[in-house]
Length: 319
Image (cartoon, rainbow, N blue to C red; front, side, top):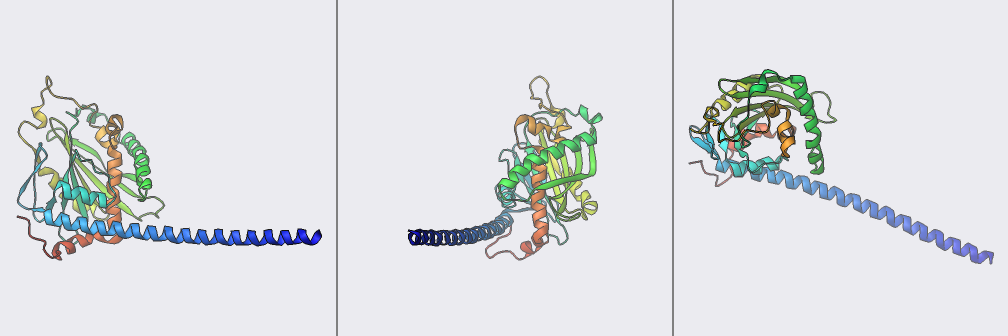
């Protein structure tokens, strides 16, 4: 009887060892498959980014042409920069990990020059006439808090899609509004989470032009060490945005026109987007950082000019 019990125990031990070995093997196999899937995903993202850039360069509009922006206004392309139309620009944005609102996105502006480490996004948000009277009383600290809160929501989306989370660092230029030209400017710095100080950092220079039915947003993304030299370019791009006759801020008719459900401060703090259930403006801001941070990481910003010069075969000049 004892020998039978010992035999049973030996068989059970062998079965257990075989089971543990099988579990270990399956674990290593799963890790290998996960690693392969991650590598494939990274390769696919890189290939899509390159394909998106090629399509963008094929469709570019060069100076001194004017580009019609949706049904609202025009952008005069300054030399030596170029404009990337809506469809190709949206594809490029998605390749960089950004969410694109098809109803508001109008296109991108880029530069072929070496050393121009920036890109600008133009959108029109058709939410009605934005009253600007609250600009007299806004508090920069409160607006900063709202931006940081909006970042958390945006990070949930980035985390779900496998992109790095971002952290707001502070103002580069506090919000300033010109009531004569109806232009708003503010600038913020941010970086990837869990990066050392100075690592993965970028600056977003945000500019707006208010109109009768909404506003143009021109967001200029660059690196921290370039913002002082390039903010003049951002302001020049904003100056080249204009509304068509009948669409300007001063064309507003209080008896017929829609008034936005938020004031000017919301364009900085992101309150408007939260209230209306849109992608938070703060979130848009944060998502945009992803592209420049990613570009800085792989050196692709500097490569814009090389891509421009080293055009793929069959890439014709924009008519």
